Image: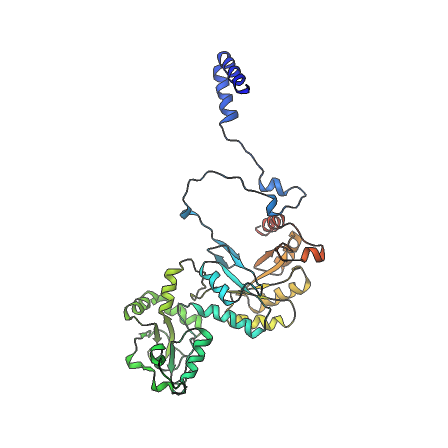
Length: 391
């Protein structure tokens, strides 16, 4: 009935004012108009919103899924191809999760609910998982027993061990031990010199521009080797060996390349890596005095960032830890938190923090809000903190 009356009314109006009415119909019913609220409209009011309080309005799609770019940033100097970070909880992130996150383009934060040495080792396992150039491979001497190779394999999950005259990196390379050399060896006390593949039978790459003197640093070596990375990759593919040792003009071991790394590169094109082609990894620390020792141990193992894990991030203890970390290790990003207000963000940014962890008591099993009666709805916290920090 309403539809009929509407049509009759329109017909009568069209006869009297045809052109203006057509424009009115198209304006009122067909031309797009703004609906919903902008983020500024929503969050300018003095209310707190959780994610469940909000929903996004759909828009027009004129692109394919392959054109979507999800890249983001974990901190000031660490980019992510996949915007996912695993939590520093003892039931969530150790080396296995951190490796998985980094391979998929995210990053894992290894928890600190374990001794300093164990947490540092967890970081080391991530950094050793995939390398472009391995500048500090585990090496042994010809007089070491095969059992030492077994220990390296058990601890680091690889068995291709370069053998140098002194058993140290930078010494003259004399051979290599792989699985095929020792798989069926019953006496693990056998000396490596009796089972290793000698240098004369090895496939190696020589780089005369690199010198393994006392002044050489791993970073300097990698910068020099990187100029011929494609060439070394081709050698590794053609020789069909699992490892490619790189030596200098005096046959001293400079670095090692692994065939498995090439396969991993193909399988995980979005892997999150540092400048040395190692997977990125973050680790959590606290704000106590002994956490400075923890920080130093983590940096020695190559950690890319540290997350100061605290339910209340804006404290004098965290500020002091941020200042210490940035002074001692300026190249390591420091993520502070947890915070939920602009004033908290201001205080941590002033101390030199490289990233902020936003949220207080919003986890499914977190009890901070219940115990302390402090917190903030997460959508409001993220909007206001990020809006201020981006300035």
